[in-house]
Image: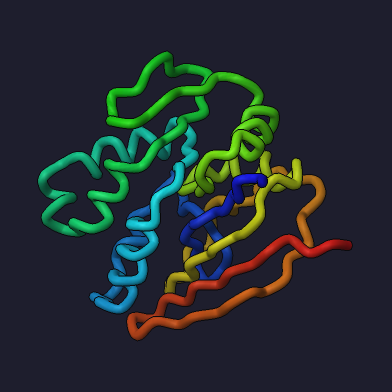
Length: 190
């Protein structure tokens, strides 16, 4: 059985994945929302493997292993530190964060192999370039998009550079008291 691959990413109301200059602060600057925090904590405790690009890895490795992260979001920090992480990078040789391995091979071929290896499911966090490449290759099974109540006006989308956007079918929409909405989509046959 093939290991499923999902994406979990934040976007602005106007569809941007990062703001100008790669800014992501807007995704974490919302009003307090214990219900959304519990949802994220539950997702992080589910296990599986994380797929990351080098930039996303650098940001996450600088935060999640710290005492500050454990204090701010203990369930998420525990999950992030426990899970297997695979970093796709042409410039890294090794990773310092626990349970991380680096792959410098063709992303689509490597992910196809990971899907077929009988291992746990995989989730891409951040890593818009990887999302676009794997969407183009038809390897993503589910997209979980957190729409944040903010307008950025410009930035980068998760699908920058994609030549054939995948047609998607809505699986679920869930709104939270703080204004965030989680949309779950699956690729649809054409």
